[in-house]
Length: 215
Image 1 (cartoon, one colour):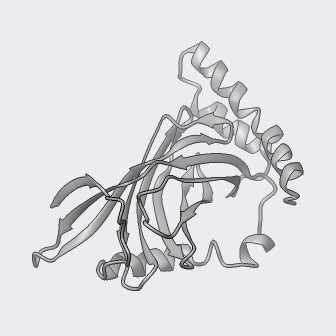
Image 2 (cartoon, rainbow, N blue to C red):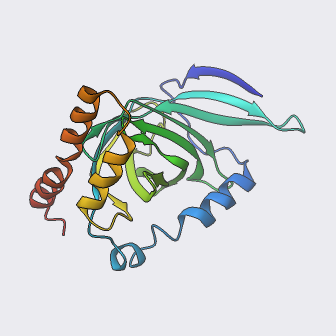
Image 3 (tube, rainbow, N blue to C red):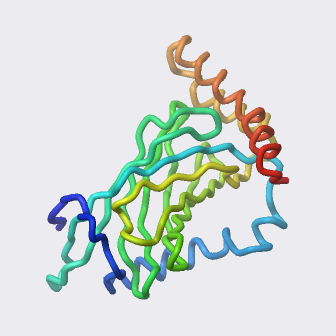
């Protein structure tokens, strides 16, 4: 049962509320491996997807378990683009974890080409920056990216992130083939626009690499 839904006030949340042990443990097991330094870099596929996202200030609410224990829940939206395609709709739900600066939840995200399946989020902080690590499956491929923002007053400030999302597409042609198949039954004009936007991914990736020196 969920309650509340009011925007977090200017005082923010000074500490994470302890709760949601099972959620945090499951998310940790699911997401630690994809983001372990060295593992991602060593196995990085040749076709990342350029992304640019922003997350407006979240809403703070509450939910209760079977024992009537109350826990904080954050809900919000994601806006931006992925692989050249604009995000049509995206939502995020976060729960503070069992230790300070940890937590997680789930998210949904949909473009013209399709929706992310099994979307999970791991939330971490170093007391200066809070990072949201996203992981899921998109067009049949693995997908992972990050959005970050100030740790102070979490939820009161907008978060943003752009970069190269880790995927398991073999190359850019594989990504374009997946998009082509996904939009095959759409109206001709919509299909043509989606393919044209997806075709920009390679150029967006190259521009980002040149701008940031990212390999």
